[in-house]
Image: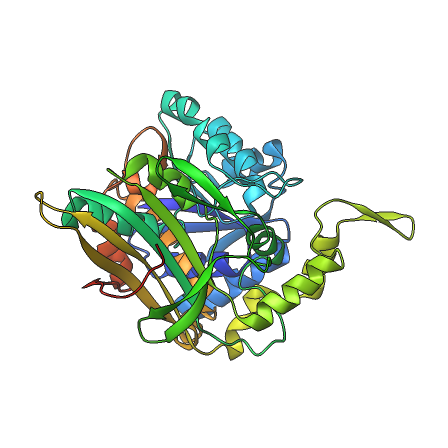
Length: 406
């Protein structure tokens, strides 16, 4: 039916390729490209062994528009799925425009030299994609991604107006390492060490980063795994949701961190290992966080010994038909070990890779269509969430009577 080109060959890419291979009725041809072709070849070999599906591979410099255009034109896909690094988003979008192909990613753009991410750079492509008659879907992972679609579902089916949204992301798993990040260490550490923001009463409110002694956190009682310390954090999906959810007065994002993780990261920051600017070392320029990335375990290698579960979802408060305010909780529980059995990946990669595949399926089958740049909550959540549940990520809707900070 359609051909897909996946750019990037990390843990998430492994999941995307394998899940695409499970649906040959949609993904009739699969191509994979990244900076390191050997990583692509390893994924292709595993997919051939598991599913009997051939994956074409090539090397690409996704920092270079011309080289990315070359690879796109070589494979002539109907869709490019970008699971490379966030600071390569604009290069790949430019290449898609030049090669005239639709685009999907899982994380928004951030400059390589500034620890700051927002959608403005990608939203600026609206007119270009619209005029080209192409569709670009942004942030189709889990958070952002599924959490946005939980919001769209709640707005469509549960509430007339939603006053507050609290997005809660819990990893209650254990990988057996003293310190490791569940996705690209450079991106992960840049994300969690920045100043926190949440939306309230029509403006962004800043608070201290999670490593600060005055950071905001509380115990939340997660389904299945119980109470976990959850820290207020800025996350990109809030930026688009404040535009698209009716009546929204407050939105916050919470993520669990163990004290062990906090202590390790605090020490690394104190000694300068989280810096993103070059430093002189033995006559060479190195970026400390990139050197740290080389020392830490590859997130794609964590799945083998990973145990425990992730619980990610949204708590909503709103009204329907002019009635009294009420609260609902929509969430998914995912098991690390079960993910590894299926696709040889841990749950963080799985919960990002499966939605990317489902989003690609929505685009290639024409369920999601349009010209321009879209965040996923602007699209129909129902067919996506139906396929998501059938693809390994079931979700639950329940009344919420628990505690959240004011």
